[in-house]
Length: 103
Image 1 (cartoon, rainbow, N blue to C red):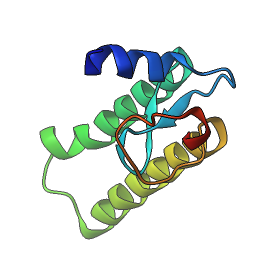
Image 2 (cartoon, rainbow, N blue to C red):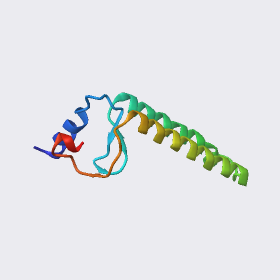
Image 3 (cartoon, helix red, strand yellow):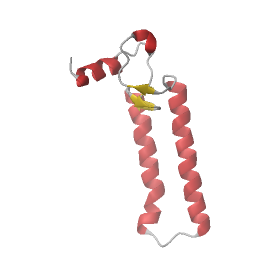
């Protein structure tokens, strides 16, 4: 069985309906349902919107830079919170678990 087929089966094995499942390698989540992908796309869009004034505008002031860092941190915290509430419990994982009780 190829790795891609195993990965597809791992992602589709989602009876709890999680928006985010554990990453296969490391710690964290990956989106597996449309809701998870929508949340991720929204956060990326907000990051681009927050970054746009820095690309096209004048050099930011110190306060503007602090506000930028605060906004990035706040949205990152929101994304982690959403992943935590709608996803599997994160843990270190290295590859696709062979037995269902290891998930």
